[in-house]
Picture 1 (spheres, one colour):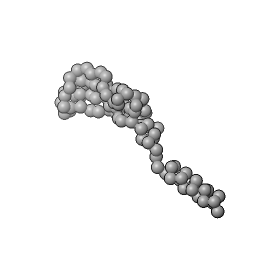
Picture 2 (spheres, helix red, strand yellow):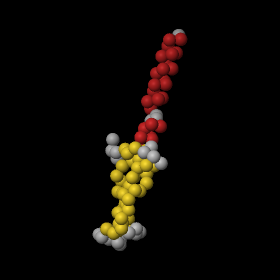
Picture 3 (spheres, rainbow, N blue to C red):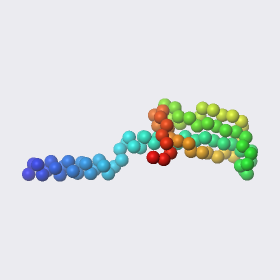
Picture 4 (cartoon, one colour):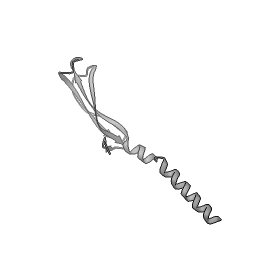
Length: 91
């Protein structure tokens, strides 16, 4: 009787742990990191500025900018940042 109970308990715990993703998987991907390209107007034909995304221990940020900032910006997802480590977009 006790053996059957232990087996049932072990199986139910295994099923519960495998069904829910753990926090390590959620943290592995981290937060998105973007490069930002700035354009002169709403046609998005003339690039006038660029900001490089980067990954720091505190999370994503920006390490380099050249040119102008404008309201006409396009964001390019380049990777994810978690705990100072880069993670790819696709697994």
